[in-house]
Image 1 (cartoon, rainbow, N blue to C red):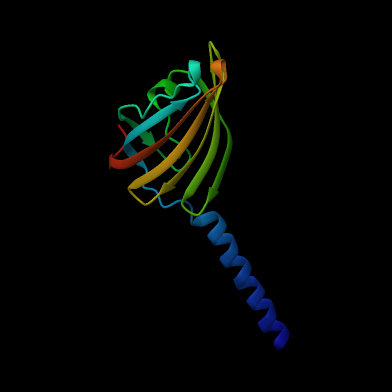
Image 2 (cartoon, rainbow, N blue to C red; image 1 turned 45 degrees about the horizontal axis):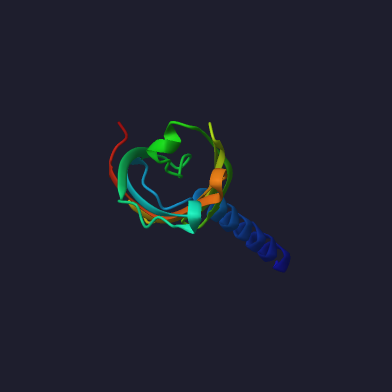
Length: 145
């Protein structure tokens, strides 16, 4: 009898672990999102830094398969996701973009809350040793077009 109870307990534990790891997923509603980002640039010639840029807003369809928004400049480049890690509602990523001036690498972290998100990113620009850091916010505005 004790053996059966132990066996059932193990089965239930395995089921709970598998359903949490696979079925839960990120708390994100798929659809058309309005994303606003702003950044500052360090490492400009002469040791100067550029203060935060004016916020840039764009729209993008986001799905649970495509959780990382790409700015308009990234959408026009050859970018690929080289690393993505999901922990709870947070997506950490590394993206590389091939540009005429060389490879640009962006790392970031986004935390979803259903129909909104907040995130940060760092973009390393090899030519000139510049680094751009910034933040982004998003909100779902409807179904994908």
